[in-house]
View 1 (tube, rainbow, N blue to C red):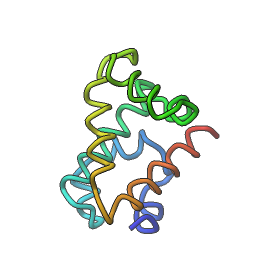
View 2: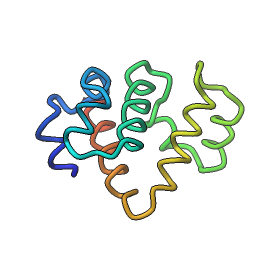
View 3: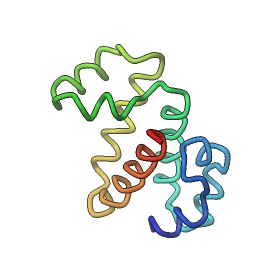
Length: 109
């Protein structure tokens, strides 16, 4: 799945996921729920409301506290919901994590 997304979405960046939207992701074989997660997460990343680099440097407890307290700009509750939902994807969690990691790497460039 990652290879298919990487080939179809260039540059592989959050704004491209937002631009293409859920229907395009669905046409690539992404489930409805995962397409919604990807577009929502990409919207937060593209707007700067969610900073994965900052979260990755925090302890789990501090990251959760930041999300729960709403110290991020608007949408902290939605960010927490997306992160929790992504962690509940089970066997497909690795696919989502790989996409998120690739998007984050491209953001840093």
